[in-house]
Length: 468
Image (cartoon, rainbow, N blue to C red; front, side, top):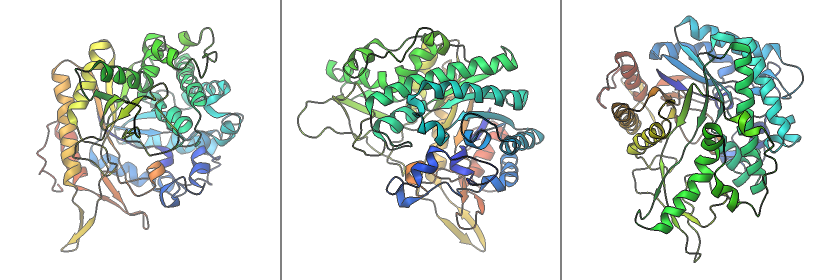
């Protein structure tokens, strides 16, 4: 299944229209100093008004599927109470339009834009938010039913919990390790409760998923027990805090032990792990780069080159004595290293550990500094580094499949240049260029290359980027 992906707050705009309520990203982006250049998602790609045009691009690309997220505050402005018929109608029309052109909708129920009213009551630190999410998920299943190919509950809950409540570089901008740990559990619980509600409405055969940004962590010295222990600590907070409860019904013992001085984890109630541990149809995997760690000696300043925005807070709870080392290049505009082999390794590790679980690469892409050039009156965006990135990662996915990994799909991130969270509009991930002043869409070379890939099923050469 070849597709591309977007997220509601990053593309929709129309934040004060159609009965939409306020989200934590509205609040965060309007807080001075929180985003680069003070950028907000107020307009973004104006997808709220231009979605028909965007569906045409999706169809013209020849995509099998389109992954998008529903903005919870657009369909239920306060996150509890009344639902908004106009917001529901917006997504219903989008679903119908996608199906009309033969594109399968892959719907994410939560891609970080929590209704602000729920945050005011504690957000993901509050168990009631997980319960509200389950009610919201049920209503979406009732409204959209079998028009959705795959229901993805959460996108990258690690970022929500650890960047939103740990380091504070994402909304809601809180730096509190206990709040972050509580958020981890309530996000996991929200997923489990939502899966129960979706399947209660649509039946046991409903396709459900969750998307995780699993970190590929490598020890600086594989022969060093200290560095191997550093990798284990990083893995437990980055990966096992989700994989454990979701797929095995338990939190990692090491993480519980190392955080015992912070919390007794009493927010994990009897029955919670059973509620979380529900069968998945497919596991979504987002992959961009790798990390390299070593044990910190305690001398000098601890290096924190983890690929996330710098802050006074720490997302690596229980791994405070782990150093994240700078990675050799090449790098993207995000400063992330480019290592396609990491994707192969990740997919094979997941397959070896969970051989009966299907996988889907739900995000993979790169930000580069793109420029529009005009030759003989024809505008083009030549982005050879992005083409190379996509080519090499699709090839890496193919290698994992050849070695037995059950990978069902690949979604390029992103369909459109968009609001890149705390980096505003400075980072461009799209295969389609967006002029933010005019909202004009222009296929980059990477879009022409991807079109060739998805319509032929064969890996094109990196030079095969001419329009056809």
